Length: 190
Image (cartoon, rainbow, N blue to C red; front, side):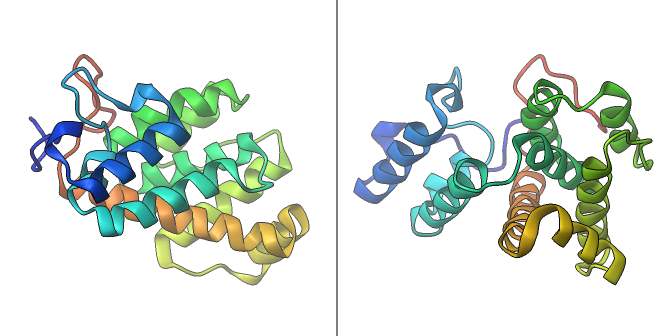
Protein backbone atom coordinates (compact mmCIF):
# COMPACT_ATOMS: atom_id res chain seq x y z
CA UNK A 1 0.00 0.00 0.00
CA UNK A 2 1.44 3.41 -0.88
CA UNK A 3 1.70 6.19 1.65
CA UNK A 4 -1.38 8.31 2.25
CA UNK A 5 0.57 11.29 0.91
CA UNK A 6 1.45 11.44 -2.78
CA UNK A 7 5.17 11.24 -3.49
CA UNK A 8 6.64 14.64 -4.24
CA UNK A 9 9.63 14.97 -6.51
CA UNK A 10 12.11 17.82 -6.48
CA UNK A 11 10.51 19.53 -9.49
CA UNK A 12 7.11 19.48 -7.70
CA UNK A 13 8.40 21.70 -4.90
CA UNK A 14 8.56 25.42 -4.35
CA UNK A 15 11.67 27.17 -3.02
CA UNK A 16 11.05 26.28 0.65
CA UNK A 17 10.39 22.62 -0.16
CA UNK A 18 13.50 22.44 -2.34
CA UNK A 19 15.57 23.95 0.47
CA UNK A 20 14.29 21.25 2.87
CA UNK A 21 14.95 18.55 0.25
CA UNK A 22 18.50 19.82 -0.26
CA UNK A 23 19.15 19.85 3.50
CA UNK A 24 17.83 16.30 3.88
CA UNK A 25 19.97 14.95 1.04
CA UNK A 26 23.03 16.91 2.20
CA UNK A 27 22.83 15.48 5.73
CA UNK A 28 21.74 11.93 4.88
CA UNK A 29 22.93 11.23 1.34
CA UNK A 30 21.25 10.35 -1.94
CA UNK A 31 20.04 7.03 -0.50
CA UNK A 32 16.99 8.84 0.92
CA UNK A 33 15.70 9.40 -2.62
CA UNK A 34 13.62 6.39 -3.60
CA UNK A 35 13.37 4.67 -6.96
CA UNK A 36 10.26 6.77 -7.69
CA UNK A 37 12.28 9.99 -7.36
CA UNK A 38 10.60 11.01 -4.09
CA UNK A 39 12.12 11.14 -0.63
CA UNK A 40 11.72 7.93 1.36
CA UNK A 41 10.39 7.39 4.86
CA UNK A 42 9.27 10.46 6.78
CA UNK A 43 11.09 12.84 4.46
CA UNK A 44 8.32 12.97 1.86
CA UNK A 45 6.05 14.27 4.63
CA UNK A 46 8.71 16.85 5.56
CA UNK A 47 8.60 18.40 2.07
CA UNK A 48 4.78 18.34 2.03
CA UNK A 49 4.93 20.75 4.99
CA UNK A 50 8.35 22.38 4.58
CA UNK A 51 7.82 24.95 7.34
CA UNK A 52 7.61 22.12 9.86
CA UNK A 53 9.70 19.67 7.85
CA UNK A 54 12.74 21.92 7.81
CA UNK A 55 12.77 22.12 11.59
CA UNK A 56 12.20 18.38 11.92
CA UNK A 57 14.96 17.57 9.47
CA UNK A 58 17.39 19.88 11.25
CA UNK A 59 16.55 18.40 14.64
CA UNK A 60 16.89 14.87 13.31
CA UNK A 61 20.28 15.62 11.76
CA UNK A 62 21.50 17.20 15.00
CA UNK A 63 20.32 14.23 17.07
CA UNK A 64 21.91 11.68 14.76
CA UNK A 65 25.12 13.47 13.86
CA UNK A 66 25.69 16.34 16.31
CA UNK A 67 25.50 14.81 19.76
CA UNK A 68 28.08 13.00 21.85
CA UNK A 69 25.80 9.96 22.26
CA UNK A 70 27.60 6.77 21.30
CA UNK A 71 26.14 5.64 17.92
CA UNK A 72 25.48 2.12 19.28
CA UNK A 73 23.38 3.54 22.12
CA UNK A 74 21.67 6.05 19.84
CA UNK A 75 20.60 3.33 17.39
CA UNK A 76 19.47 1.08 20.24
CA UNK A 77 17.23 3.87 21.54
CA UNK A 78 15.81 4.56 18.06
CA UNK A 79 15.10 0.86 17.54
CA UNK A 80 13.42 0.61 20.95
CA UNK A 81 11.18 3.57 20.14
CA UNK A 82 10.31 2.24 16.68
CA UNK A 83 9.38 -1.15 18.17
CA UNK A 84 7.22 0.46 20.85
CA UNK A 85 5.16 2.21 18.15
CA UNK A 86 5.53 -0.65 15.62
CA UNK A 87 6.78 1.83 13.05
CA UNK A 88 7.63 -0.48 10.16
CA UNK A 89 9.66 1.95 8.09
CA UNK A 90 11.65 3.16 11.10
CA UNK A 91 12.43 -0.42 12.09
CA UNK A 92 13.52 -1.16 8.51
CA UNK A 93 15.74 1.94 8.44
CA UNK A 94 17.42 1.37 11.82
CA UNK A 95 17.63 -2.39 12.48
CA UNK A 96 20.59 -2.72 10.12
CA UNK A 97 22.29 0.33 11.61
CA UNK A 98 21.80 -1.08 15.09
CA UNK A 99 23.42 -4.37 14.01
CA UNK A 100 26.25 -2.50 12.28
CA UNK A 101 27.01 -0.66 15.54
CA UNK A 102 27.44 -3.93 17.39
CA UNK A 103 24.11 -4.63 19.07
CA UNK A 104 23.52 -8.38 19.04
CA UNK A 105 20.80 -10.12 17.06
CA UNK A 106 19.25 -11.67 20.18
CA UNK A 107 18.80 -8.18 21.66
CA UNK A 108 17.29 -6.84 18.44
CA UNK A 109 14.85 -9.75 18.15
CA UNK A 110 13.76 -9.44 21.79
CA UNK A 111 13.06 -5.74 21.29
CA UNK A 112 10.98 -6.54 18.20
CA UNK A 113 8.92 -9.03 20.21
CA UNK A 114 8.38 -6.49 23.00
CA UNK A 115 10.45 -8.52 25.46
CA UNK A 116 13.19 -7.25 27.75
CA UNK A 117 16.49 -8.39 26.22
CA UNK A 118 19.30 -10.05 28.17
CA UNK A 119 21.96 -7.38 27.82
CA UNK A 120 25.66 -7.97 28.31
CA UNK A 121 26.33 -4.23 28.33
CA UNK A 122 25.07 -2.18 31.29
CA UNK A 123 25.01 0.90 29.03
CA UNK A 124 22.72 -0.82 26.55
CA UNK A 125 20.46 -1.96 29.38
CA UNK A 126 20.24 1.60 30.71
CA UNK A 127 19.40 3.14 27.33
CA UNK A 128 16.82 0.44 26.60
CA UNK A 129 15.11 0.99 29.96
CA UNK A 130 15.15 4.74 29.45
CA UNK A 131 13.58 4.49 25.96
CA UNK A 132 11.00 1.91 27.08
CA UNK A 133 9.91 3.94 30.09
CA UNK A 134 9.52 7.05 27.97
CA UNK A 135 7.41 5.24 25.35
CA UNK A 136 5.24 3.62 28.01
CA UNK A 137 4.44 6.68 30.08
CA UNK A 138 6.56 9.70 29.12
CA UNK A 139 8.29 9.55 32.51
CA UNK A 140 11.44 8.06 34.02
CA UNK A 141 11.63 6.50 37.45
CA UNK A 142 14.41 7.74 39.70
CA UNK A 143 16.60 4.66 39.26
CA UNK A 144 16.45 4.83 35.46
CA UNK A 145 17.05 8.58 35.43
CA UNK A 146 20.11 8.31 37.68
CA UNK A 147 21.54 5.37 35.70
CA UNK A 148 21.07 7.38 32.50
CA UNK A 149 22.65 10.45 34.05
CA UNK A 150 25.71 8.43 35.17
CA UNK A 151 26.04 7.00 31.67
CA UNK A 152 25.28 10.09 29.57
CA UNK A 153 25.72 13.13 31.81
CA UNK A 154 23.20 15.95 32.06
CA UNK A 155 23.55 17.15 28.45
CA UNK A 156 23.45 13.58 27.21
CA UNK A 157 20.22 12.93 29.12
CA UNK A 158 18.59 15.94 27.47
CA UNK A 159 19.81 14.71 24.09
CA UNK A 160 18.65 11.12 24.69
CA UNK A 161 15.21 12.13 25.93
CA UNK A 162 14.87 14.47 22.94
CA UNK A 163 16.00 11.68 20.61
CA UNK A 164 13.29 9.38 21.97
CA UNK A 165 10.69 12.12 21.58
CA UNK A 166 11.82 12.93 18.05
CA UNK A 167 11.62 9.29 16.95
CA UNK A 168 8.23 8.98 18.61
CA UNK A 169 7.07 11.90 16.46
CA UNK A 170 8.63 10.31 13.37
CA UNK A 171 6.91 7.02 14.24
CA UNK A 172 3.58 8.86 14.51
CA UNK A 173 4.10 10.37 11.06
CA UNK A 174 5.11 7.05 9.53
CA UNK A 175 2.22 5.14 11.09
CA UNK A 176 -0.50 7.74 10.52
CA UNK A 177 0.58 8.26 6.91
CA UNK A 178 1.01 4.50 6.39
CA UNK A 179 4.59 4.76 5.16
CA UNK A 180 5.82 1.23 4.63
CA UNK A 181 9.31 -0.15 4.09
CA UNK A 182 10.51 -0.16 0.49
CA UNK A 183 9.12 -2.76 -1.90
CA UNK A 184 10.48 -6.20 -1.21
CA UNK A 185 11.06 -5.55 2.49
CA UNK A 186 8.90 -7.69 4.69
CA UNK A 187 7.04 -5.79 7.42
CA UNK A 188 8.15 -6.71 10.91
CA UNK A 189 4.73 -6.62 12.58
CA UNK A 190 2.32 -6.54 9.64
